[in-house]
Length: 486
Image (cartoon, rainbow, N blue to C red):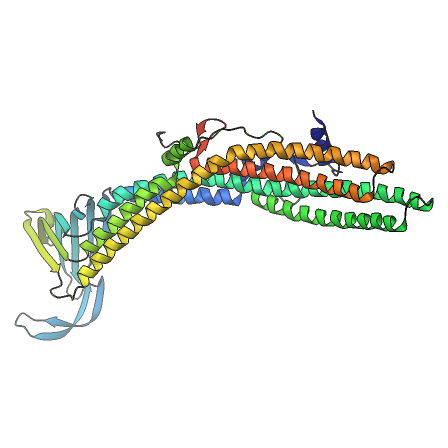
């Protein structure tokens, strides 16, 4: 164990007066990815997308529906207008019970956008005034409802919805890596404040010792009052720094505790990650992983399809033609069983349409708007793709530079600590002044913070490249493999 590691170990536990839970960076990330509100939000969002996909799949399956089919009020007791056979009208008391039911097996036709159904319909009439009863029903009839020249949502949903579902799975994997990246930032923020407090306490103890030494020198006349006041000022500043560092640590700890779901009464201590994941990232390889796994790449295809669907929907709205046809058997009788005795044929067909004859260019303008929106979407997709690929390449290039930065910062930390110890020893024997000691102290503290900053940048970049590619370069495996079968 080198001198720097020994120093950090002493510093990290110097202020711990009670037993505390110790967390490594892996512990914090694991907790954030399983217990944080951000994870629960991502998990719930994934579940929501799953059930949305299940709803889409169910839309193509047949449905059995039971529908009330009264054709009017279920019960009537009033003076009503009653047409007579000769065309006249009489107002007569009406007391009737008229229920009805329709049992339908419906199946969407995904290739044409229509609906076909097989139905059984029953209606019962009872004139309560004279107790006249009658059943009317169709034991079976087939009904077809088919729009012509219209937008077919089944066709487009079948192309778009599976892509959305695949996006949701990749989005969840990306969210986990984003949670890890956020946890790293909270972790290092606490660690920085934790080290700041330890540095402040260490400096306070040293400055208190130096002040006592300088007082002794002043009493025997070997130093000036000006130097004594300078040392006293440095001591007061150290006390102020220690108080501020305690408050900053409390605030940073609260943010981390809230993010990873720790109870407010749980005390914890963070350890400095001395070992970093050593990875090598090649630009083109990283870009290939991103193309295979990132939600953005299939989102580009989904956005193109949605733009094409919008054009198709606008085109379908220009005309409205609907064909409805049915064929079946029906009958009437005093009893329900009479409906099934020699039923007669029932046929129905209707064609409705609505088309503008003169619209002053409205249809043409609507189509041109839809086509312009499609082109705009295509340009936006192309720009987003270039931007994303540049982001992946930039992140891949940073890894090697950040590893070198950590090595330099770690060496600088060792050198700055050694220089401060030399300056402190020389000051104690009167070979250097307080100004040089203060400079060495400041450089020591800055070097430690620079080392922490370098670690933060590397760990953040590490999880950013994982998020951008959904590939773990340290373990050489996919974080989400689109080729796996579920």
